[in-house]
Image (cartoon, rainbow, N blue to C red; front, side):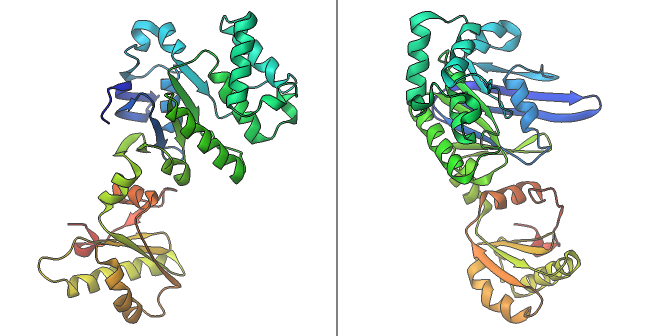
Length: 332
């Protein structure tokens, strides 16, 4: 990140009783950046979102937006935030325009300037033609656009969104992602939480969260490049067969390795064996011949963000622990 951070997070932690939900998270987000916090359920995304939106105080650490911290200037910090929650916050019985006008009044706005601002935002969100319609008549995608317009009424420096694609159909999700890219391109700093890999791919940078810790930070391309090679996946009939196959594959790769051995990693994830190696494509013929009948399918591809998650955490995104044999199972 070349530009100075508009959002600075330093050592943020949050505990609920004896449970540590967030553990010393630190990162920065530049002005005009589209930044995604990606993680599974229970990874810490919602807790971090609540801290950044000032709904919860941290147990330790701090953060600043435009140089303001919640301890020093909570009101000023909140004026710089626009927040879109995962659960809908619109009044379904009011019209689209009425929702914005009521919210504007709460913010201390009013009169012709408020109407002009609301109208301009509805145009920008491409929902101006529905201004007089009740929210209950809108699709999920259109309602989400109205929520974003509402969050931008006071011209915040940072737009926070918690799982913004929740409940949207694929077409509406694509439309929303294009809108968020447009907002970031126009100078609005966009910070969102998500558990969707394709949504995170749209971000300029990603913070990968797992069990309350930030385990990776960078652009999607950087993170995938760090995996260090192509990925082979052998799908088996059962978890037990995958355990046996992973051990056999690791032993076979050790036996054929030349000195110095290429960097590779073999792990078992559920009923599949995952092989990460710069020579993955060259391994396909020998694996197919040596282990014929022991797997249902074999796939080869470039590393994905899911592969990055497995590489950094040692378990799958849904929490299934990875079993890594020794030697070839450990990347050099």
